[in-house]
Amino acid sequence: MTQAVPSRSWKTFKRELILASSHLFCQARQVAFFGMGASGSVARDAQHKFFRFNVPVVAYDDGLMQRMHAAAMTTGDLAVVISHTGRTRTMVEAATLARETGASVLALTRSETPLSRVATLTVPVDVDENTELYIPMVSRLMQLLVLDILVTGVAQKRGRDFQPHLARIKQSLDGTRLAD
Image (tube, rainbow, N blue to C red; front, side, top):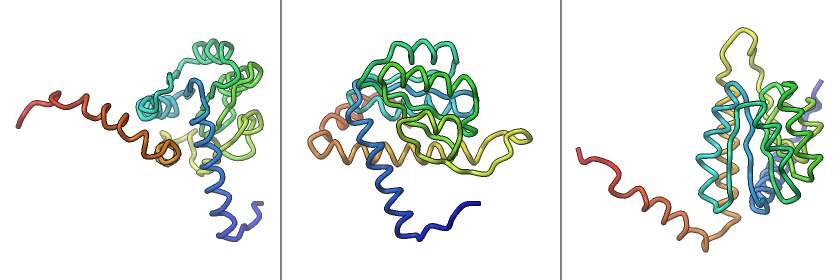
């Protein structure tokens, strides 16, 4: 049974969690997003969002590539492991390998799961969804929302001096669309 938490302290906890997560991204030498199934598409979306921050970013939805990349990580690297259940053996093993190499592991998963216990930091995405019967939708949308919040947090942490870099990336798309 979950203990009730006053809304003010819950908001403070969430804010501190987002700040700590943003700090992991800002300090990372490289970032690897790992996900499988529906979480694999979330990992690819995260790669698309986070590459803008001048840090090498990859996304893998293949378990063998996750293991190999995790084994090659070092201190200063960040593995972001995305899993609704937090119980997928491949994901937990990849997170464990990354931790053993000295990398930080940020988990986007349910609270109190094998994955959350291995992670350096967990952003709990506690959504009740029967993935045995239905295609995951709500959990995937919540994972995407959390990543959007983290992108915003990282952009804010980078500060105004980083805005010209983001503008250059946006300007690189000028002229790529056909006129109506």
